[in-house]
Image 1 (cartoon, rainbow, N blue to C red):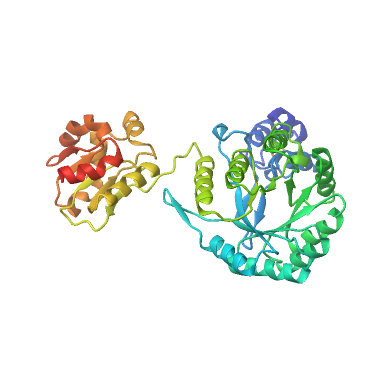
Image 2: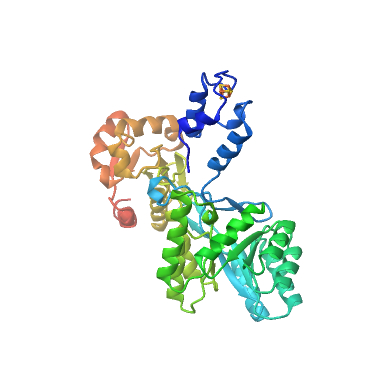
Length: 444
Ligand code: SF4
């Protein structure tokens, strides 16, 4: 639970020596409570203070790092709902292969994972992980397939097996990949914990009931190993939703450490629509790693797009750099369009200009990532403001055109823009970007 400034002050020496940079211990305590200072600034903090404040400052959901370069991150969430602040580390998608799959199918899936890229609002989205499930008893073959998955994709892996020996061999074979071993049970936990720790892997723990799972994670954490994922055993979508919500609420609202870990979920229904529904539930309700049973490009595109929507920071609109963008191969007398630097707006408008088959210049002033009408209402898309940007960005030296096509939604700024930009004519374009093509054909 977060401590108040007064609670923290009781743990400090109360000598007001100022060495931490604050005038009093209370002022320093207030800064600590607001997470604007670190306890290490006080050289006289007691062991008790270090322990209590250290535990209180741990994120309620443990951060987990995966991959050789540890660049895939999970956890560290602090809110239940995205609009409260933001979600931090997005749900990772893994595509599963089985050791019983034909070699051509394995090869095809691994290539699909490696090569998949989806561009959305200027971001390249890729598949994060591969899962390898053991269904056969052939340990050697399993190890070979796991190594192949690692060598081909260089993605961190989720290794799933009920056999301790197989998990141990695999853990050694892909040491350094910082992958996930799934899943340790009350019976196998002691040995697998040691294997995971020795080889730098993350351990996914599972038990039949939530109570047993809690007992298991509490026991492991006490022993000093803390790189864990929770693998809930549920029988329906409703139960999956309920258990994930209970666990996350307990971690965030009650600082309940045994449930303060990201989760791992395997989807196995055999029905693409049902699998997609389950994956969406995982995305929306706190999934750490979501393992899809196979690769389907249409399903992946839908899930990636939804993930991008959920895991963008609602306080920071995604935006493109304010500047003049060439669309196609514009010449000095090519048409000049105007829009804002909200990424979604920019990519829709630039795409529609491209679709129209014309080359043009697209003027994008700094609008703090707001859409056209919002930016106009906030005073960031007025005639004088746009005129100032055009003068400063050097457009007048770059083009001979003196006509600028403004979005139809802000037709009202045409007069003030012409007044602030002598020699220019403001031509009112369509309201919707989808009408740019017909506008170009009719007017240009
Ligand atoms: S350094 Fe420590 S003891 Fe000194 S004022 Fe700051 S908090 Fe208090």
